[in-house]
Length: 111
Length: 111
Image 1 (tube, each protein chain N blue to C red):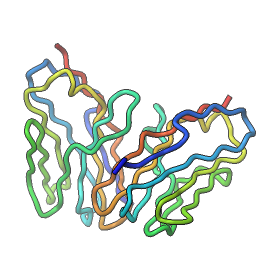
Image 2 (image 1 turned 135 degrees about the horizontal axis):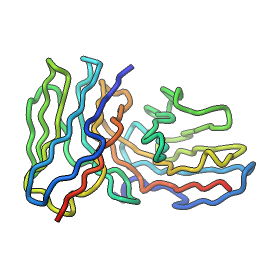
Image 3 (image 1 turned 120 degrees about the horizontal axis):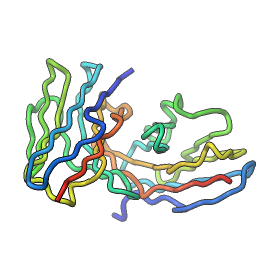
């Protein structure tokens, strides 16, 4: 298995633009997590899904953020409109209880 | 919700010495405790984990201990090497819920 695959690896966008981050979890895993990492705030859980159903989105910063998991092999995290303070590394992780494995992350820069 | 505290935030040890990182958790129902290593610019990688029915687990130079009564667990690295330099995160999970991460420890091995 290739592991958790995220795309793009890097994204530079202008403030106000829509950004979509993508994640393909490990086949057979039934939980998927979206994390954001910054120097100031560390690793923050944004949202997680069990069996494609969103379970806890309390970490989503505001309505500008949305996440979907239309099937077991794909998830997206969308930011619309993007702001400079959204600049961070966004990680997707998947698990089949209990071990969780991270993707390589997407480094987002909003200018 | 679960609260995981991690200490110290930074740790420097001489090459060949041992390093110990400690974490405490608040929810006595948590039953899974992984440790992740994150090298600069890379993803967090699972290095060792322990479940609540075990008090200690060892894998070559790394070991993890768990004290359920006191609600704390520790990572021990012996015979440290330069490649052990990284940020280490502990986490706690209850059942099939989300991973709650500590704030990380930056470990530096001094040659």
